Length: 272
Image (cartoon, rainbow, N blue to C red; front, side, top):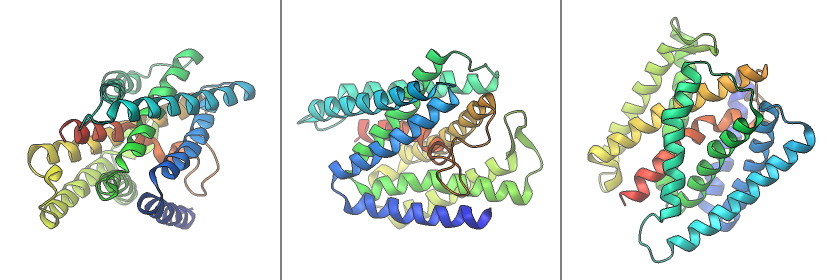
């Protein structure tokens, strides 16, 4: 299982980095749209929708995402910063993850309403998709932000396996431990110090903004991971899908990004 996980991660990493740097934004956005549709289908399965409804949900999410992208692109022309629609979408995502998703997991709210689940699916998926599409304008910066999520996930997994003793949320995800979270925080801290020292001319890395970005992304990543684990627990499944050997489904790979990227995009684009 570990070898399959590592092999899949290696292929995905190479493909993602290549696409990020070499694809034009339109093709990058289209590739993300395909991944969004798969993730939407998987979310519909977790929500308990029937097969026909899953297709409608995935298609509806994709269509609304394209509409949002066009609206944001039009609004951003000549603005020199973040547009109002983009600010509202990222802001709504941050509010959801901070004040709805975290209590949802902490208090073990049941996920029985299909209407609530479909609405949650949109706010989980579309803002993150938009952030990935928009932030490709500076691929080096986006890769540096994605590395925070990947490093936190990897460090949490490895440290949890090696030293995990104290369960983080045993009724939701028994494999996750406080030692894993500590390992993730330590790894992200080392990464921040190393990167800010290596690239001092990256202004977005320096000072309070850089610290807030790295700390916020790391914490949001943990929230996203736990939230998806709770959704899977409610649905009675171990993984959201079987597309990625050793990892499960697309949702299993992007849960941390779904929660953290809108926050990163809001902080980076709003503050310049």
